[in-house]
Length: 488
Image (cartoon, rainbow, N blue to C red):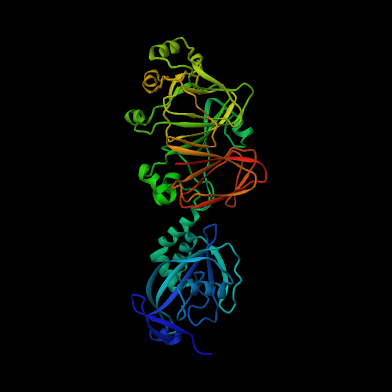
C-alpha cells in the first residue's frame, strides 16, 4: 500500500505540493491538518486516548479526532470522514479557527502543522476503532484544563496548545450552542402580609412560608437577580449571561435599547387577601424619581376562588379632588371597576392605572423590570413587622390616569407597550419559528400539565427563557395545555 500523502502548504494555507506523511514529519515540513472537537448536550467534550501503536504521541489523550486532509478533500469532508473512521460517529461540524504550531517528539519526528479546528455536537456513544483509539471519555472544559495543568504529560502537544491559546474560542462556540436550550432559573420567593400557599398547593412550588405572595420567576433587578438552576449555565446570574452573550442572549434590538439591563420581570402572585390599592409610574416619572423603568403590566388568571375579583381603573373619569376625597373617606374601591374573574382571563394594566388584586386570585404577571409601587390604600392592614405599611399619596396623584378604562383582553395575540404575549394552546407537537423575532422568548406554563420543550420538561407553573440565538422551538403535550409566550 502506498504511503499516505499529506498536503504541504505555506503560512497562508495555500497548497504547494504533496509529500509522504513520514517524510513531512521527519523534515518538519508545514502541512495541512485538522482537529475535531465534539461536545454533548451537557457541554462535555469527547476525548480519545490514542492507540499504543500510533507512530507518535501513543497512549496520550487528545481531542475527539485529528488527522490530515487528503488531496482534493475539504476540511469538513476530512473531519467527517475521520470522525467515522476513528470514533464510529457522524455529526454536523463547522470550522471555528486555524493555527500553526511546531512540536518535536522524542522519536525524532516533528509535527509542523496548519491545524484547522472544527466543532460539532452529538450525544451518540462512540464505537471506537481499536487500531486508532484505546479509550474515550467525556469531560468538561474546566476539568480538562485542570487535568492538563496537573498532568501535562498525559496530553498531546497540539491539544495543549489549543487549550492554552484558544480555549476561549471553544467556550464561546459551546455557549452559543447551549443557548439554543431552554434556560431555567431558581424562583425568588417573597413573603407578603397578603400572601398565601397556592404557589405550593396549585403550582407545586417549594415555598418557604404560608404567607408567600410572589414567586419571581425571572428577574434582573438589583438584589433580586435570577440564577440559573440547572444545565450548562447552572449558577450563572441572568445579568452576567446578558453581559457575556449580549445580542445572542436577548436579541440585537433589545440589547441596543436596554444594554445589560433585562427589561422584564415575570412573577406568579397569590393573593390570599386583597392587595393594596396602588398605582405604578410610567417610564418618564420612574426615571425622574427613581432612575428606573416604569411599570406596565399584564395579568393572566391561573385560578380564582368563587367571587374573586380584580380592581382595575376608574368606572368613570374623575378629577383629582374627587380622588382625594375618596382616599380620605377610605372608599376609593367604590370608584374602581370591580371585575369578577375566572381562570384564563387576561388584563392589561398600563402605568397610571389604579388597581388591586382581590382575595382568592392566583395569577401570572408580566411587567417591565421595575419594583416601583405607589401604595394608596392598604385596607388598614398591618405589615409583616406589625406596623402599618407606608402610603405614597403625593406620588400616586402625579402618576394616576384619572380617565376610565376597560382593560380586559380577549385576543390570543397581545401587543402592548414594552412586550408582546401569545397565548398558545398545545395538545400535540408544535414547532414555533423564532427567527423573525430578534428577542429572547419566555415560556410560562399556565396549563394543568407538563410540557416538553426542546427535550426538557416544563412543569405546571414553571417558566423558562429561550435565548435569541435559538431560531425555533419544539413543544409538545399529550393533553390540552396552555402557555404564555412573551417577547419584546
